[in-house]
Image: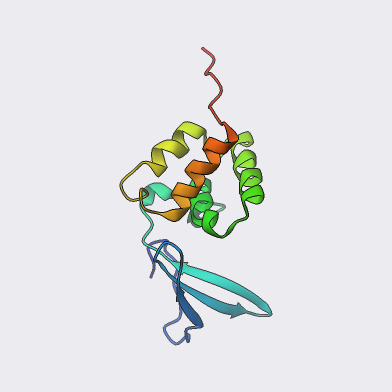
Length: 127
């Protein structure tokens, strides 16, 4: 069982295994006629949530993880949508990417540069 609670059949054979940009194990698998990439990461509990009963990563952690493989314009669009939908805010993102476990992650650095380039700030809180 993985830290996300996912379980895999022990008889499954591995697909093409690789090390991703952050040094984590990844695997390309076929599910029916679709190719999927499975990432094996030790994800802290603060980066997980449950949506409709399914454990998954938070929107912020997902953005950090996909940043290394996402075109700059697409990442700006994704971050803007997350901010507009209040899935996370700028302060939360900046605080998370400054934490020890994120300081050397390429995705966290890319997200930080993206936030800087976007000129993002949190709206003032109303009293």
